[in-house]
Amino acid sequence: MAATQEELIYQLVKQYMQVSGQAIAAEPEPLPKGGVVQAAEPIKLTIGVSNHHVHLDRHDLDELFGEGYELTEEKPLSQAGLFAAKETVILAGPKGALIGVRILGPLRRNTQIEISFTDARHLGVVPPVMQSGETGKTPELTIIGPKGTVTNKNAVMVAWRHVHMDVDRAAAWGLKDGDIVKARTSGNRSVVFENVIVRTGKGWVNEFHIDTDEGNTANIRTGDIVEIIR
Image (cartoon, rainbow, N blue to C red; front, side):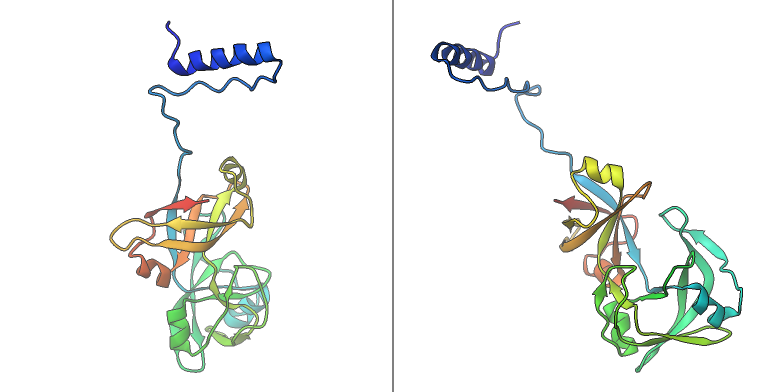
């Protein structure tokens, strides 16, 4: 088979450098058919749009539903072991209330309330943007259940937009837990979401999570596709 022009040029350069005593660069990998180098495969993830919801700890579940109460699973979520419970609560703030707020299980170490900024205006609070699982001084909301109430002022938040990735898949993409990336949507209201936090775990489903305000901004729904920009 006749040598390509690139191969002939490399051989001539190699011969010259051998004669002159210069170091020889490693032979380049062969070009793909047509001589075009393909760009890295884009990272495309399914979108999950989250409505307001509550995560409860054991103490608060007992206060709201009775001692020893157990959540009833209504449907599984995308990440293994997580589920939407049949039980709902009321969230009450200084200016208003949200009725039928879903509890997500299983129970957590600390209770956490996740709302959107639209919800926050209705309730009359200004919550910080925080990562799920973080705690700190936040505005106060009351959770009302069938057996009692609890007040939370440590984890009332608008959740930071993030992606879940399997740790091995993330590494193959050159990403790790805590990295910050961008996410580009498609469609007639396409946007690029900045400051997206990468969160990794063994066996996690690869998914991009935003709240309802962000989903409405870009006219996207759960199940749509987003491209991650490194």
